[in-house]
Amino acid sequence: MSAGAPGDRFAPGALRRLSGRELEALYADLHRRVFACYEDGELATESGRVDRDTAAARAQAQAQAAPLIEQARAVHAERLARLRRRARRWWIATVVVAVAGGGALLWLLARG
Image (cartoon, rainbow, N blue to C red):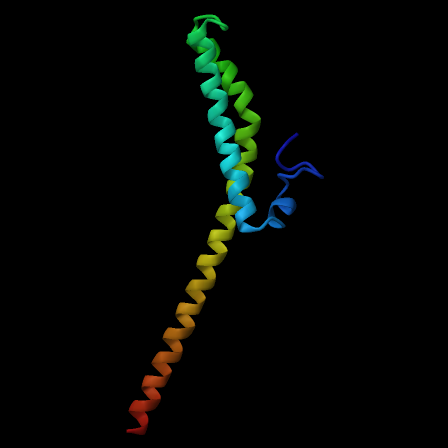
C-alpha cells in the first residue's frame, strides 16, 4: 500500500490526526523495524541461511525495508510540516512583540 492511498494509516490526513507523541512513536517504530530488516539480513548471511553473497542479502533486506522506508518518509514529512508551522507561529509572535515594543518605546519617547 502506498503512503497516500485512501484509508491508509500513513495518508497525510490520517497522520495529521495523530498527536505529536503518537507521531513520534510511529516514527520510532518504523525506524526500529527498518534497522531490524538490515540486521536480520546480516544475521542470515552470517549464519549461512542465505547465500554468502552479501550483495544478495543486502538487496533482500532493502526489498523488505523499502515499504517501511516509504512509510517513514510520509511520517517524517508530517513531522517536518508541524515543525515548520510551529516555527512560523513563533516567528510571527516575535515580530508582533518587536513591533509592539518598538511602538511602546516610541510612545514613551514622544510623551517625555
